Image (cartoon, rainbow, N blue to C red; front, side):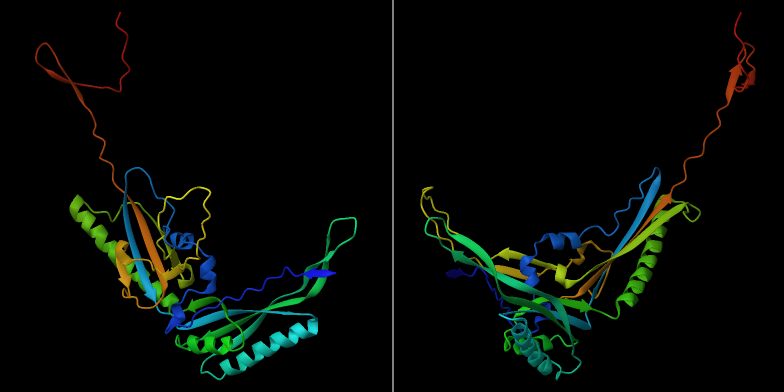
Length: 326
């Protein structure tokens, strides 16, 4: 009998770079630019449209540097028996984790993902019939994730070096966290409040009337964008244009895909906190909308006056029911 193994093991390598806390993780290769467009959607989709309303809107942006990071590395191990696959993956993980724990302010956690049998096909050939492919057990596949919490962005270089020495290469994602997120939100709300008041005062000057007693409607909201959703990609290549026959074989090489961090730009905001960005950051957007009911013009009473043949003026009562002329 001849065995054909259809199992394909793919190892994805990530390059270690200086200050690579902002590096696009392996998950970025499977993302498209729709994630970036989604992050740039309108903060408030609720409309306050109504007749005779005047609208006041303030939008703010804050760039927050992360103070804690959690990197997730995926580990896959295959083996003939359950004991073998467990021993192999534990050896790789335990050796890596023991070295990583020696670093300052670093914590680790092992997350069990899956433990499944693996199958392959064997061919069975008979003299007077076609080949038959029979599925048979081939071993086991075990997946675990290593979650590593760290606070110094430069530590990621050393972590990747330690893991790669134990054949762990798949950086699935790298999450950003900040303890100052709530305080930044409050600061943005206070800034927006002052700008709203200033804008309303300017409108009062232009209109020549006070809006203090006008009926008002207000809505506000936040949107938080994390770096993992803010990477864009493009294919860095320039193919030649040739007039070839339709039947001519064309062998194309694999093109390099470039991934880069594209933050939300500050050009459409009324105020920006920490406008200068060097490394990927957590970006918070805040918007407040106010609809102010403007006063309608006062209704004027109409008076009708009758001039008699003698030149006298008599006021007409329009509320009196007219009598038919006989």
